Length: 174
Image (cartoon, rainbow, N blue to C red; front, side, top):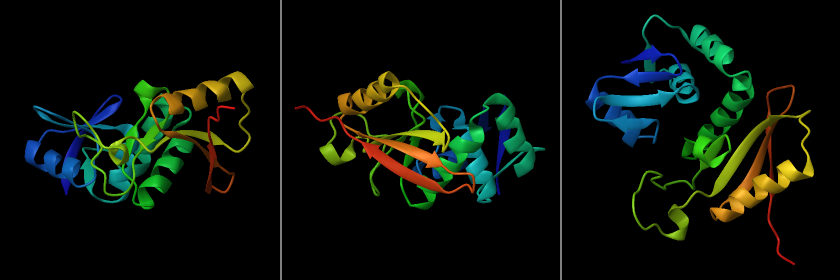
């Protein structure tokens, strides 16, 4: 079992070779010079799948820790897990103002330099509970954001039973 260490809002795998293996076999985390840095949502998923362990921290304890840091973690994790289990490469979407960036199956989302149309982010995903409400301005911003990076916008709606339904909203120019 590959071992990671909880570091506030991240889990770090200090063994560079093991970290590189996880990174290249699923596009998890950020590969750094001294190891692999995983977001909490990635780490919780990998712990649940028994791909990694986190020192002195069982799945429930790690999940509860993430919930203390991010009140939306349960919703975000449900959508993340659903997308991953559909076989899609998923990356965090923080710098794009969304929860996740999702790529088509088979795409290597970390490629630098020029990319073909297929290699770009396919969807930007916002994870929300079924009772979420938003203004038209918020919806418009989300759609425009996705359109500007040549992606489609998805709302990942999590119902009270923990099931995900996705709604795609597109920008249409009259």
